[in-house]
Image (cartoon, rainbow, N blue to C red; front, side, top):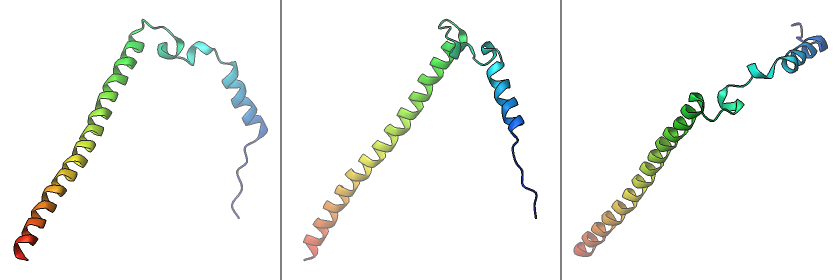
Length: 88
C-alpha cells in the first residue's frame, strides 16, 4: 500500500498566518495599489488597448470570412440553377 499524504493542521495554519501577517505593500504592484500616474498603470492600459485591437481584428476577420462564404454560396447556387435550367 502507498502511504497517504495528509496535510497537517500545522502546515495549513502556518501558510495562512504567513499570508495574512505579511505587509500589504509587497502584495500589490503600482497598478493594483492605485497610482494612476505610474508607468506600470499606463503600460497596463496600453496593453489592454492593444489586446482589444487584436481581438477585434480577429473577430472581424471571422465575420468577413463567414460573409464571403455566404455570398459565394449564393453565387454558386445561382450558377448551378442556371446550368440545371439549361440542361432540362
